[in-house]
Length: 459
Image (cartoon, rainbow, N blue to C red; front, side):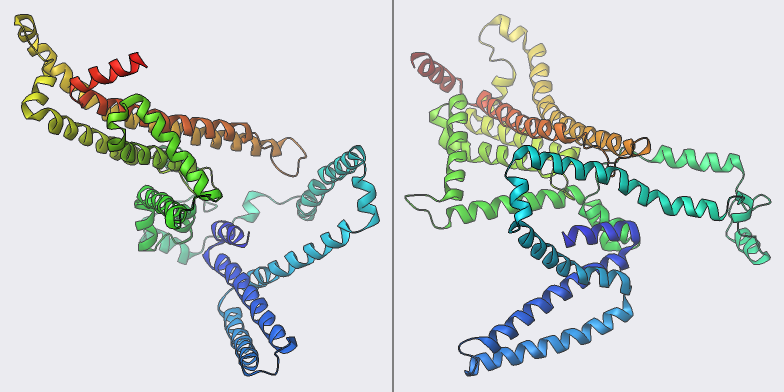
């Protein structure tokens, strides 16, 4: 919660307030940890032993150093934001204590004894907040309007001094009018130019927040430039970590994580083997199953707050499609031989009619092979990017309800489409995996196709 709050503060108030808030939270948590160690060392049963004395001395020295660091940070960083971050753990403790007292009270037991009574009380609180919160928010603005009812735009515009005019002329800025404002035509042209250069905006992620908080930093530009690649690597590392933990100590009676991973692998093996055949399943399931899991995780990764779906970038989806295309061509050349691969592209002519159709069939097969990575990449990119834009549109629509309603927050109109995004993200990963399986199957020797078809028919 503190990290998300610090990111929001850095985005809307600047990088220094966000840094002050997160350091205040870290300072408070470190102080709690040292205080706990000191209390345990002093009041424990072995408090007179040498290790307990060392722990107490270490905790006391750490707290002294921590207070010195806090004094320096209060001078260097905005103290208000640092104090706000420092109070976050205290607020959590107070809320926890209040909830414990409330849950053990007779009033709470009376309220939850009947679901209808509890529903009426909750509804009453929501309605009260609906009317009270907007009134408290609008009251300062109303007071400010009454304080200066006759203020005009000309009154609020600062006067243009000779120094400002000279600086404006020196830097080559647009000429200003009498009140220091740019001409309407230039303003409209600049506004139109800005709107023309902007494209559709997705939800802000961690890298976007950092690039906006540090607009002049080279590392921020580097992260923003390779944003899709970084999130792709992050998803891959998370999958590797989960697989390593699940397979590190396999047991005959598997735990929850091992059971989940084994169920997923077994399901993918049976699904792919039903398409490509048991004969080739052991060879191709590791590649195709990993591809399906990787794309599925990347599709759903953008639903996590401050994260992004790498597959919403055409660069990532085209790279995945190129890997499938090259792997399928290599399988065809290796399984059929170079002559058999060219014979496959020519349509396997075996008579005069077949050889006469070679000038037609060869370009069609080549274009068909080249179209496969394009169709794979564009389909996946379009669906995932469209889901993101749909969620952005409905979130914006929900926020816009604040303009005509007295709701304290916007309507969560995007919630039904989150479920739809889960479904379509899973479906698109499966489609990519199935089409890749079919492309590889078409490159295998045709004798294998015949045997597999007879086996499936007999089954």
